[in-house]
Image 1 (cartoon, helix red, strand yellow):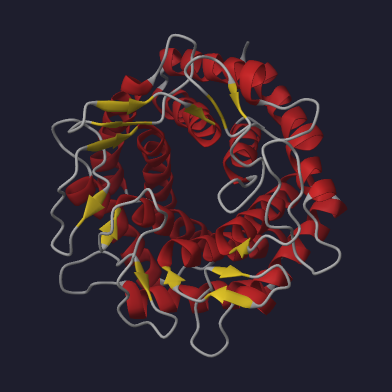
Image 2 (cartoon, rainbow, N blue to C red):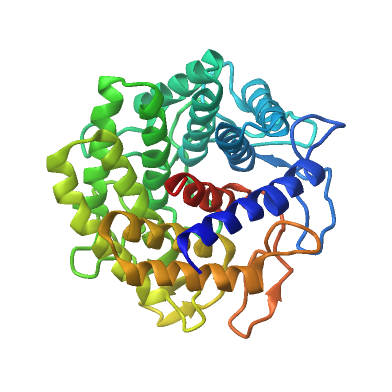
Length: 395
């Protein structure tokens, strides 16, 4: 394997396997937008709720694919996703994005989860980047203003996790059932950093620039554990972490997203601070690497319990994070780690018969078909982005 072959295989995977699955199997021609779920065994669930995260990630993926490859079917899918996000998920009375809709497109869960609003910015800004569409940029900026007005903590810094539809306090702020109910989280901050970076590419606003820099420094100064190199996951309002959980996939994903943000800001002093930490975080993530080239999911240090499943999204981020180390730090060993993980993905996760990737591979090597092939959390964004990152970095 070499970079040329890797890039070629990434484009083949994107164009031949990932994107056709979403175009052919997930387009909801009866009710608009995209279906909410296909099970791990390939059964379509047409009346499943439609999640904001899924739809915003579809918007980002097909917008980015059109920007790179200029295929009309990708533009058509991106336009479909853009219309559905703006016409159905956007709250015209209070602003922000609904968390979920029923299968016909009516509001179901109207809470304002900041993570989902971040992904809507990510998708809309990418659509504008790909097409020059002014409406998409207008809505991306509106959502940026909503996050800054309602979620940003100007006293203690950072962003709160969730609010009610009317932007009031909400008792259960969790992103999912597996998360801790804390006011500030690494995951939401990472997925505000990510869309703010993309928005700044197309909208050079001074306040956005300031807040993007602040987000980078929240990671380097608050979220990063300076002793271990891992990111702390859950915080109270005063940035106290009470949990000892390591998420290897988030570590490696954050290593390159933080670096990307600093590169976009093009601040030499900031890069001098960030770049050693990029390598530090990636090295900590490597504690989750396995002899077969994959990366395990997470460890609960207090309980001495480790989830050794190889999740689809973790492997995708593992490849990008290590390619980033090779590209910017001339780390040949990191490149070999990326190659080995890609080999694992091809052998165990890619579903050549039915399209897309399986959710995960268990420690015993069996494929997990109990979790979704497509759904609220299973989207074309991690694996699609992996392919497009490699394609764009080595074009």
